[in-house]
Image (cartoon, rainbow, N blue to C red; front, side, top):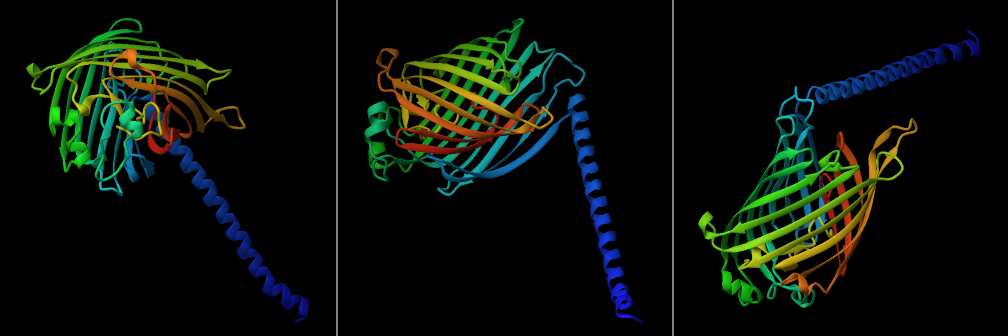
Amino acid sequence: MTIASKYAASVIPVVLYLLISLSCLGQTASDTLTKKELRQQKKQLKIDQGKLLFTPLAGPAYTPELGFTIAGGFMLSYKTNPKDSLIQRSSSPIMFGASASGAIFFSTIASTYWFKDKLRIYADIWFKDMPDHYWGAGYENGFNKPKSDSTTAYTRTWWWFNPSILWQVKKSYFVGLNIDYNSTVVTDPSPGVSQDLDYLKYGPDNLNSGLGLVLRYDSRDIPVNAWHGMYIDLRSTFYTSAFGGDNNYQVYQLDFRKYFQVSRPGRTMALQFKSRIGVGNIPYGEMSLLGTPFDLRGYTWGRYRDKSMIFFIGEYRHMFEKASGELSKHGMVAWMGTGSIAQDPSGFSNWLPNFGFGYRFEVQPRMNLRVDIGIGRETSGFYFNFNEAF
């Protein structure tokens, strides 16, 4: 046998092996792609039939009040009546987690639609048990009081149950009831907290119960992620011992939002103006707060509080396009805003600046995973949640 024939004899099996391997890889990739397409088809079929969709998620976050956090959760969406073509999908994003500081938390913000969209039921349900900080009421306390174990530290257990039941009386016009039960229990107050005038007045344990009237105009195309439309929510809620609570006070709230499409679907300018005015003996745990994951993101939740609050915010939302021109699942946002707190509306004078940017990933149709970085005056925060801030 010649050298050439020996070389061919040794190389040909190797070449054949490589060709067979590449063929198998190609077949595997093709099978994987087919399985992916089948999964997408099954998911779309579930959406078309109004069936339940379940999307689990988990990831890290950092907020000024919780510190480093591992958060998990899932997005549930469904039609309350799969045969009803006039209602959109209801959603119930659920989040839970724990932080390095020892905090544990749970929340859901449910939006449900019933009876050909004649009935809408919304619910905020929250629970937190956490080492926390309380600066006292008013801008001066929030801005000037030093945060420390002796001046602001305490442990707070808080829960909130807040359903709203709305009936559509005319297209886009709703009227209904707001039900609010909440509790704040304080343990291990630092000297700075135990000497605070509001803490001394209301004590470490407060249960508040309220009932109110809601008037709403809502022309948004998809409420959890609107691309166009307007939202005006007026509500007055009366808290009283007659409903089982410890305190008597009233809260009046105006929430105005407007959404504009910018040149094409997936590019949205969102504007919000919100004011919450408190009257009466409002305990420190239920004062109006400014700087939450749903308004001026980046501030410590609870640092700026008083009887009344106001803020403005503008946010640009951009979903990217694929080469085909279809919208991808990826997007970004950027926002700017400002707000103020005071005893009453005549005292709004110290305005807190805020801006930030974020990433969006569509986990279900028009329902996004939200990752935001917010920056304020001498503070910042990183947020991980479902759906838009407003």
